[in-house]
Length: 158
Image 1: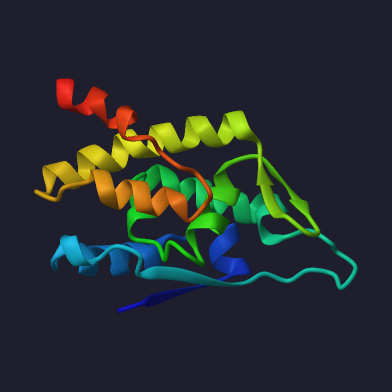
Image 2: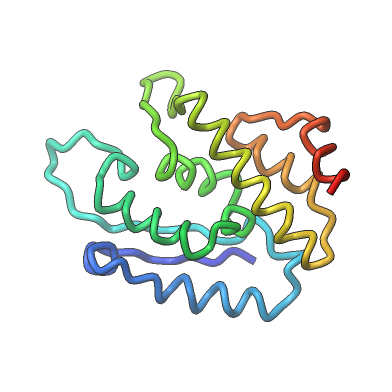
């Protein structure tokens, strides 16, 4: 079941997370093991017709997503992985847009962000009794990042 969260300029400018908080509380009250890849955002943010920027290049929009990420650092697990996760990561990681290749993330920044998110999501899922490795690997594949199995060996030592 997909869940849409609508954002407008007022919510973004006020850093209002209330629609996300309500939805996440509802999801967390249910079965988390079947809740991955469900949330997506519709963003209505006014721009001049001549403004070539993508939403992830607008500082106010990025700030809202940074605030969201600080509140729910494990949220990427709940996002629609195919459509929303790449945009979410673009809100957090420096990148450029290429006409033919699409989003090109800064490789080092992407690596740091994915490692950090993997640590957070791995622990969050494990604490809820969910086997995290395959879910996390598949999640990151949707942004073009192949996480090697050897990366997870560090978790098994702790």
